[in-house]
Length: 115
Length: 114
Image (spheres, rainbow over the protein chains, first blue to last red):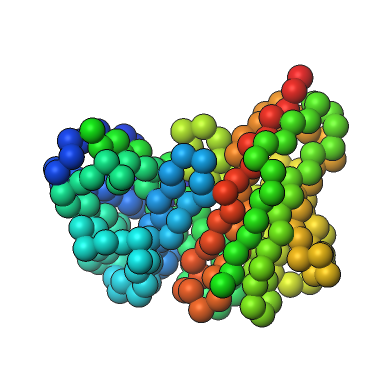
């Protein structure tokens, strides 16, 4: 169990640019989640995959945001035309997909700063 | 809607004293509750969860949590705090029919004073 990894750890970009983040979940986990965390707040749900299928998206996920998990393994989160309000920590988590509520394991996050 | 509330922004405790971090919940149906800890520049680490069964749940690093249905609370506790326990603590609830996604509280900063 090598844990959830995210890349990059930090990203500074200018307003209007596109950015893409990558998440590698724990290998046997078929569920993958993206959350966003701003200073002084808890993580807020963005989107969820079961295997390669994106099953739920938050209203927080505007049309500028897109996420993929093409082979049911790693996932990418892309933000187009970034805005200063997109500055946050983007967290990825994974879990097993069994019936009982399972804990999610989080990666270290990608901190995005939009200037 | 499923939600949790963490009423205190910061908890200060002397090293060696008992530590309590408070959480109350609001759910429809059975509550599935979690505690996570976040250290600076690191992701959230799972501490413990309540699904069903005993009201006292034991978790990692000597932490435990007490589920109280009548008070709709799920307080995190540690009998003797360590300086290394200084971190940000989050309570979370599984969102009903939400594909197991979690709704988090705003977090509590715990400061353990040597």
